[in-house]
Length: 255
Ligand SMILES: C[S@@+](CC[C@H](N)C(=O)[O-])C[C@H]1O[C@@H](n2cnc3c(N)ncnc32)[C@H](O)[C@@H]1O
Image (cartoon, rainbow, N blue to C red; front, side, top):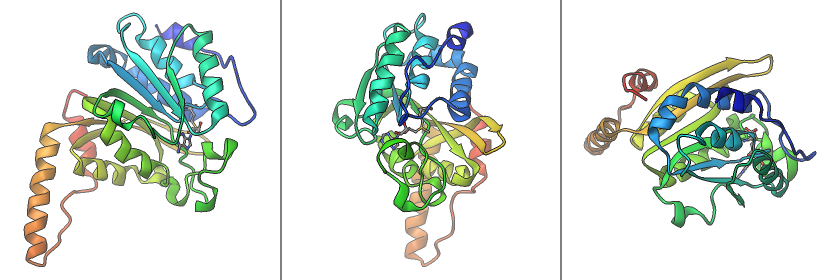
């Protein structure tokens, strides 16, 4: 199966569409490393937000094609040229996904609510002036605004709405995006997390984080909310999540 992925070529491109780069390769390498778990996971619906060239969603479809032939794929991008290129990349590899030109998952929320088993996101994460976020064309591929978090911070609540009870989210982040804080945020929503791949290139330091819903984390988050309410009532207001505990936490489970 590895050889299948290795054979992925960029069959289609466009000057305004993000060509697969170190971040795309890191995300696919993380999926390859997790292949056995992904197959055991038997995802019904897999989704990529911000599909660009289609390299990542096509790789996932090839990775799962034999063992999970019933999986359904959805890919979105805000750049209309990206949706065209993604369709062509998928077709060239004999794969199919519903490819939607939209902002994050706008218009899909109802249909996909709590039903996505695997979500992939390589977001625009580069710190830039906020004014560059959401520009038309290729700039929307990297412009992440302050701390590179403007789009990421919009995607995470959507992911929470769409992920199924067994849903997994794989997301690319930079150290500058403060991945620890992202884990703490998600932990408050009941997600455990783990960095499944770290890679430093000449230009950036990439982390692929995997999030999954976890009953113990949810209980802990609810307990903390209760304590917070009590303490706030008493005028305290202590921090309840160690910013470092999420790394250890994620490592203790099978995911
Ligand atoms: C870093 S590129 C990643 C492309 C591809 N997933 C890959 O890994 O090669 C980020 C992609 O997100 C898309 N994007 C940016 N903002 C978006 C939004 N609000 N909704 C959907 N897609 C968005 C961009 O157009 C771009 O294709």
